[in-house]
Length: 224
Image (cartoon, rainbow, N blue to C red; front, side):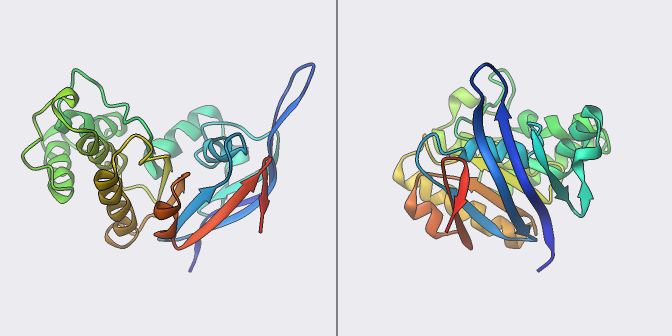
C-alpha cells in the first residue's frame, strides 16, 4: 500500500510568554485507501494534528509530505490550492451555507476550482448526492434537512473535487446513534468506492472500530 501522507517529527507550539505545545514529534504515515481513526482524551491534540495534516495550520518544526511532495516548501497560495484539489474536510458541524440548496453547497468547491462547466458541476454534484441517498433532497436548504442528511451533504461536498484524502473531525459527534452508524458506514465505504484515504478524529469507540487502524494521542504525542 503506497503512502498518501507522511510526517516526520511534526510539532506545533503556540508562541507566547508561556509556550503551549499542541502536538510534538508526530511520525505518521497514511496509506492509500486507508481509514485511520485518531483517538485520545480531550485536549490531547487530536484536532490540532488534523489541522496540520490538512494544511490548515503550519508546523513549528518537522515536515509533511503529501503524495511524496514536501508541503513545507509551499506558499500559502499553493497550500490553499492543494487543499482545494486534493483534500476534503468533514467537521462535527456541517458548515453548509444556509441560503444554498444541497446541490449548490456541493457545487461550491467545483466552482472554486473552475475545472468544470456549470452543467458538468451540477451533474457531478447530483450524482454525488444520489450516491449518498439524497436524491429527494437536492433542492432543499440545510434547515429542511435532518442532522444526518446535512452531514451526508457535507460528505458529498468533501468529495466534490475527487480528493485523495478526507479529514473528518468528530463527524458523528452531533448525530444520534442511527445517523452515526450511517455516516460511519459511508466513510468506510469511500475508501473503496472513491479510493481515498480517510483520517477521522473521534471519541466514539464504535466509530473507531470501523477503521483499519487506530492511533492514540496523549498530551500531544502518539502513544502505543
